[in-house]
Image 1 (tube, rainbow, N blue to C red):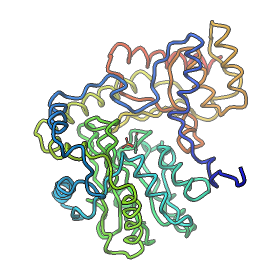
Image 2 (cartoon, rainbow, N blue to C red):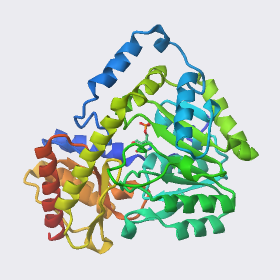
Image 3 (cartoon, rainbow, N blue to C red):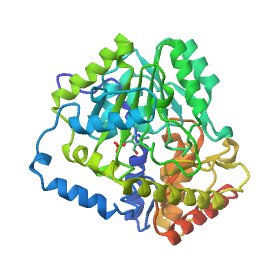
Length: 432
Ligand SMILES: Cc1ncc(COP(=O)(O)O)c(C=O)c1O
């Protein structure tokens, strides 16, 4: 080519949750059956969408309106409905003009970071869901700047660390949080959220809160939405139906924007994101048309309650089986549907192995793990020896060692066997 076609920061575009699939497929080709524990897709893991939700979608499909464009920011009646719903929570009040729909939050994240001034950095959690950390790194051209989620305190944000990073790095323009969190399953108490907003207020920053799992909080766990703690600070909450209906293939997510009129720079940034969306006309119509009907149906609350109590029970089960290994830390998730298992660093080295009877698979794994991060090395052995595909923690913008698995398997026997197999595999690997 006459010119270099590569964008300046392509090395930051990493998504281990899917990258591990490619490797697992190669292991599968060598004869190992794979149990997919890498991806947060409830449908893929056997969950069924309740028939009443499908009926609402079916009825909407029969209407011609579902086949047209909607407004650039999203279907007006849906945005009005969501604004009313937000306002009922009693915090920051919004109107339909403060809501912007995307083709899934993946698209939303790409646009928000894509149109943020390159020098304006967003401080995000570590570990972090890689779509967010990669998008921030790619927009800036530098490694993502992070604050620690403290595993000693159940993976809650370390406020002191946040304040120090903000204080000594004036490029930071915003703070990102994910609540409930992916990959840790942590749910943040209200006072932690207030603490984060307070830092944002004192240093004149905006807050970006990924609330993909806002409705997946286990029974008895208390938290707050950004709107309830944001006060007069500029903020954006990101919401999605992917995990709630669940309908990840519907590609429907939206941003709720708080206090955009209170800061000119923030308002101008929001307007840029809207203008960029206009070039695309609009986001997928059907899920937007369906949304108020599903959300306002009395069965939706029951549907969420039922799922939350199932995930809660599975979290107890996983933690019950996997805890008790010295140096291996597993905090009980309180929301979303993931857990993170952490290895103390001294536990892992580059000599450890698991028994793999099949010569072809063994040599493939041995060849592949050379020079690899210690937790990814464990994950590759787990794949080769047991066919279980989890995601190494170092794929989540952290240098901590561990892995993330999901609580999504619907087959009780298979799920329990998977946890037990992982436990045996850890013991075998650590003692090899
Ligand atoms: C924290 C978080 N944010 C955003 C997304 C993207 O969701 P979607 O693009 O399906 O709306 C996910 C998906 O797993 C997620 O876990």
